[in-house]
Image (cartoon, rainbow, N blue to C red):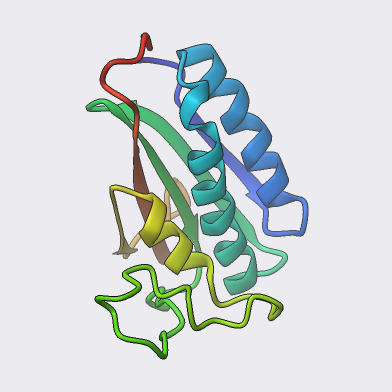
Amino acid sequence: MTEDIRICMPACAAAPGFARTLLVRRLRKWGYSHISDDATLIASELVTNAVKATPGQIIRFVCRWEDGGIYLAVWDRSPGRPAPFPAAGPASADPAGLADLDVDANGHRGLRVVDALALEWGYRPDPVGPGTGPSCRGKWVWARAVADPSSEGL
């Protein structure tokens, strides 16, 4: 599949909405609108975390179709390892760890949401920033959202 999204944007309040808009349009074009809710929520959480980690700097958003699903990744300059906010309850009763979180509190749920919706997710340190050289080290945080194999995508 072609027509990946690869874009740089400022780490600002508008970045998550911009990433969602691009992603919805691309999923529609690829014939995968049926996964846009989950995929846009995952993308929004990844971009939001990058904005919080490196406000005012440049971040990168990537979306591509691969192996029956959507690969989403966000790069930022922060070398810090992303970590979900710890849940208070037992993991087996609530694998996403959402039950014990204060739903009125701002933040700390993003990676738990990603973990609940994505097929898999992770991060990798980037010793050399994409296209910018060693002075822009950071990390990529990525996730895969599954497209229904019975769908009529490209």
